[in-house]
Length: 238
Figure 1 (tube, rainbow, N blue to C red):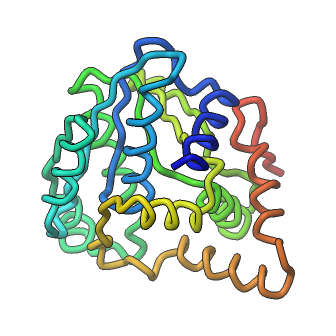
Figure 2: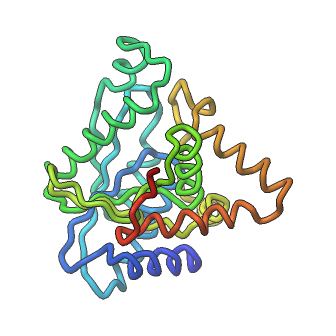
């Protein structure tokens, strides 16, 4: 976990993510990224110069699955885990029968997570997005929207009075997978019917193909995306 904690601490310091007495809601999906984030923040809380509290929230999308390994793991870290049942999966795939479900699904899931964070008295929400996510979002923005943009490392939500932080923004996906396997951190595969057939998956495969043709191009794309993650940088829009 040494490399993970080093990169997490760097991100926290570079973007001033954590302040004294923050109560942070870790949004976990059960996937490898968010489960590593839960473990890393648990360890970081022991030596952070700014003391903070953690709670975890899992939005149950209604796809089924056994959450007991995640529950037991959160208990071992002494972090309360709240599982919020929803009908998001049914709404998106059955009632609405969305052809491009990701946008609506993400919107509904964000809303449920933010409401839960407020319910449990949190002022910040931590998400497990990493540097590959950052680059993929940049490519989607360029190719589908015609603008240069990606998500921020820190985002303040005026309406909710919540701050969203992404402490794994310096981590590569392959580093996360290695850390999860080495430290035997439990995670579960997504039960989403669209898993593996999304625009994000297409960007992931595109980056992989480009890097086969142009070595280290994935690192260069990430380096191009990182300045956009700062609130000091405005997205370029022609």
